[in-house]
Image (cartoon, rainbow, N blue to C red; front, side):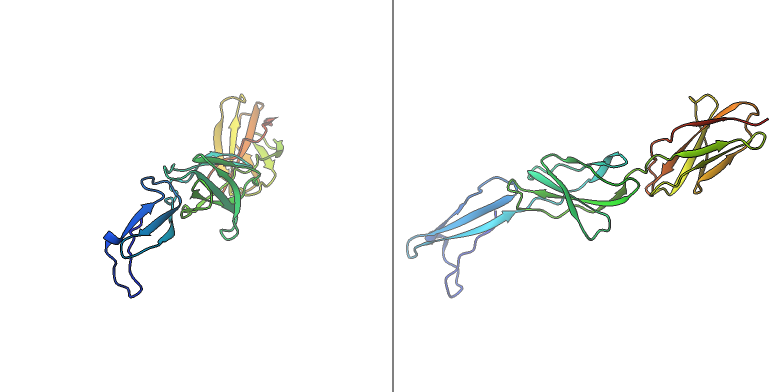
Length: 233
């Protein structure tokens, strides 16, 4: 509750015996817009009503709980005084778009672009959606890159095989995996290039290869389709 001070036109405090104060919100701590009414009596007459607001606290604990290529699920700490939350996103931290307004402390932001950096913020609102708290600290993250596509896997030299794949938007690096049975996989290398030659392979045996793209926030894309080749003797 806000404190009310009553003074006359000369700035002198008026005794509390000459008025009563009535709050529209006497006990609730819910965010919203409320009124306080001063009713005069005795040597004074008339009423005066003021409006005041209880703002929700700043949202905290904002994080990504589920990563995808074109969507991200966000969660944050629930606030008892908030009824709704406005979720916004930006690609530059300057221009913000409202993704949704939800009544729970989680939201899935859809229709994003794969391998793209985004910024998010969440603001708590009251039941009318007009009284807002301070926006959360900005969360910088990114969607997963699209899965790479291996364009070729060739064994031109004995004991070797060269994999080549297309550049993936937003990828900071690529991880190359190999397998001899397409079941158990071994990490071969991490590279910023779009081709890699595997060496020391068993001659005359089939080798399987798959690629993963890693975004700027060290999150892996879905695996590429698997390619195989028989290693040259």
